[in-house]
Image: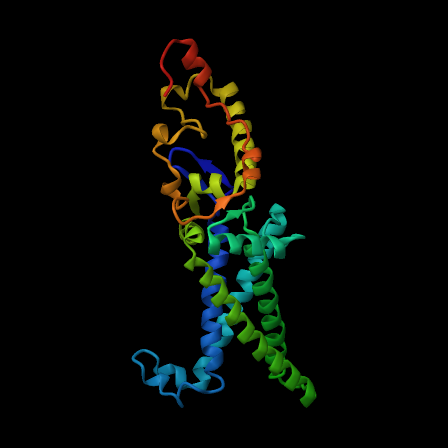
Length: 299
């Protein structure tokens, strides 16, 4: 599940199944919540949405209410899973950092003008800001939604003013969340961001793309791979043999991996010259030393 360079595939494992599960469960339950929430107003019968084949149920308040509650339960479960999973693993790379607003502007400006991007970590600065924005309004929706459910329980009552404030805040959070989701999706209109979109389906992104646009993350991946390779070489000896993985830093001619293969070709903003300084020494390939000593050609 951890980030890993998959040299033979020319890919980098960016997300494991727990991340993909949490992401898509939260995304789909949120969409259902928004749709069923508008059905509480109600507007679907007024604008004949319930006449669309398959959406006849959308005009029934009792049904949309149950759907809304069910989607809310799924959302809260997925959100709790997401938080606990990353707390246990101590993974905080998606959280905003100082300077993210300025760095986001530089990245967006580079994509618009074809200029140079600052070197990025696993997550781009605007990804970290988008995560914080969407998370904040999802939290407001969950908290205000809980209050709105509690008020319906027998023997529970709130003052009229409290309910008005809670309802207004719930509605405001809904529209601001929709805006955030729209902005999040609009980011993929830029060609440079599209490899990240497919990564949310497969969990993988191109190795050349990572080297080009995420050099800070790539450096850590190479150091980790080098450490793992050294242990494997010491314990496995010549078991890898000629079938061992290719060096991560091999040229395009040797691996067939070029910048274009990962969406880092034309149209992708370049990284600032300073990014070159972070490229580490490539790790040794397990079994290479024994092959060279035997006189066999290493490929």
